[in-house]
Image 1 (spheres, rainbow, N blue to C red):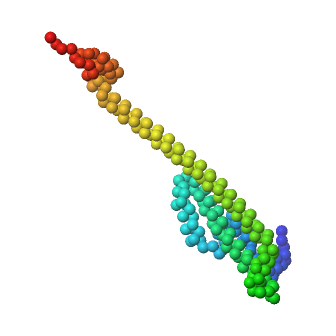
Image 2: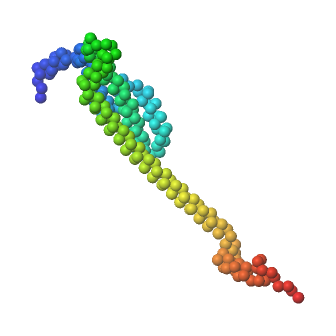
Length: 223
């Protein structure tokens, strides 16, 4: 357990550390977004507009119209991944902007157009690790997006098939109820007759086969 003296010393040391003071130090500190803005669980950076993020999530939700909790979670993941992917170009531009500030005094004796190219090359060489990290994170995010899209399509197809099967089952059941109701309504036994529908149908077939009553045969002339 820390003593009172140690706590006081820690507080004093904290007051002495106020972060980077030089332009170069501040620029390097700003590159922390390359490491945290793409891989961390926090989607929004301090520079991000919450309203724009919410509008983006609403647009993605309207695009995929999730209907279940699983689908909503996948759509949210897709929206967050696309938000991070959209951040990569601005981070790359930021790296080069930082580098141009840092190396603004380099190659002073060169022609302006050549000097600009040389400074960009120096930025790339100096921040190659950060730029490569951007490329790696972009590939990872794109794979994650494709994975979530495939899972979402599968979930929606399964839900659609289940809904169609349920609808067909309901239609069959409804048809059976209607037929059963009609059968009861037309059953001679229900109307006080002795014979059932099965008997009367058999009798109807016999009548149809009888040349005296069949509609498809000529009746014999009566002398």
